[in-house]
Image (cartoon, rainbow, N blue to C red; front, side, top):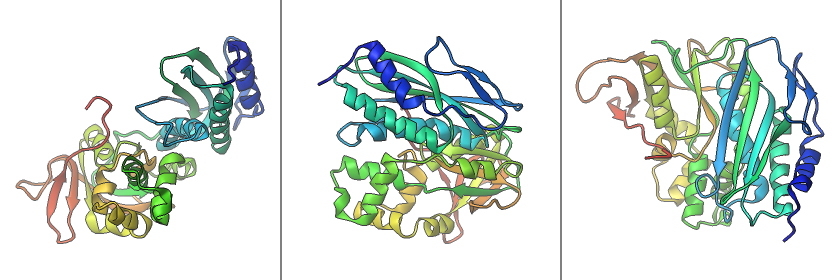
Length: 332
């Protein structure tokens, strides 16, 4: 195992991240990696900041992922937050806490994954921090900008409910890994495992919804759980149609669900594999988004077949049922 000094490792990271210097729009990097802090000339628009941590044993296991996958996933988790607000990614900071077993080859692989993800979303890594830890964690701070950031709290009664990206695929992939189902078992299982290992922030879809969507968020903890955040913040009920969700999941996900002995609808609604799909409310259709329901008032009726806030499912037979906001909870 080869493990360099702190300065040598900083030099390794600077070499891996230092090749990209350009920022989008009229923003620019004045000082990048190598000083006490990065210095940016911001864009002439409101800045949008987010931070996301990926911790070994909580977000990833190395018997299921390679180090490049860890780097990629950690960056895309933060980038998806910007996509959900319709923001243009600008630049990133990366803070690494490395366990003793992370040698220089592993560090370089992790950095390659981060750098590839940063290049994909056009947000260079301009600085960060490096430390030793009992467990490995990767914390990504991402900066972007948007003229009018899209919030969770602006859904309006009568809006349509739209979805972009695959929901349930990553959860199926994670379940396959947990159950020891090899990717060679079936192409649908392989596709789901890849969806979990290499999620992609939907930056282009996020930009497409600017000026149209009324509210939005990304789905990382399951559709039912994340949809409840929009419903609560906006004081509305989100109504999803079972037939539309099943039709959307037809093919790969339905096949994988069958092989795993699951109802595909359960994967779509409650799967918490970090899909990074975008859930949007909008008064009109948006290119790249599929309609899955509608926004109703928070008190849409009374009785067991109607909802009062939260998420409601319209079954194929037309009856309604409230959906519990189940999904991943760090402290649940």
